[in-house]
Image 1 (tube, helix red, strand yellow):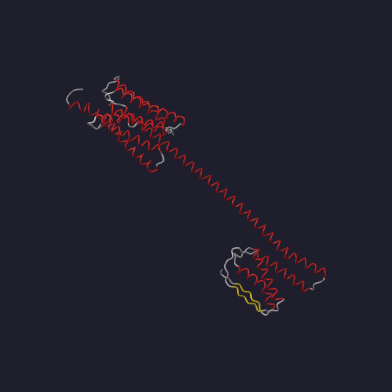
Image 2: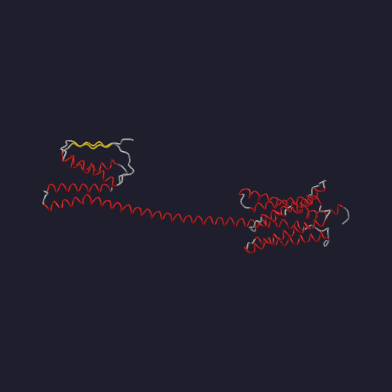
Length: 393
């Protein structure tokens, strides 16, 4: 259109500039912000590769949009050709890798081959100049479009198997990429008016955002699955803890029963060896009429004292030997007072004995009781002294 600039510019140039330049710049700025946000989130965890590759793809397309809207001038034609090639194809490899990551696949060799092919194409663009060889530029565009469509189609297929809703929006974006890129190719080949707008740049932001939504949905699904696994693990741990507590309680009950059984057997053995043998001996004396009433009474008192000692040994003393000796003094106080013997008690504070079990308590009681009984009956003593003190090693 030819005419007065003041009239033609607002009518033709400015709307065209807004559509072809400003809109692409706004898309690039939006993807720049999205890429930086995704990069910051990934940097905080450094665990989710989808966020990283979404960030790389968004930033790469933002760079491509910048080069497309404001192509930098370069005096060197090779640098100019390299920038022209980067403007069109820089985001392709990150986009394909992003599709693979979203689909849960990672092909190291294929990705390495793609990066090597991109580096070789950049070198060819700088050396040969694709503007001088339009067929090479067309071939690069066709390869780029084919790889992009193949990766997206594979991802949509994987998503439809898993019934993930964001992949339906990705399918719509894929159709938009195919249609708009096909139109630009027809425009380049002369099948459409060359003066029309470039439409492919309008499809890429929607495609990348659809990929971002898919990656975000995948990330949220993994997070929910992790939380669910964590809750299940906590439940299993709680169940195991309850099982361990139940088993431990049963073991404690079994140990307690065993201890009671051992104590019962010990008491039975003590009574059998002490009271049992004494009663049998007394019974034989009574039958043989070889003992008078005084001897019988004395024997019965001895057995009664032994029985009291057995009962005292069952009381908890918490390792305090002073308590054991105090029980002996209490049991013997009547006999000592009746004998008229002077009784001296010199028991000093004693340390706690951790291994002072009932059988040892009974042995100590029998030893001391026997010593006191012998002193009162046979020693004709005027005084009896009981002393106990702790001697440090």
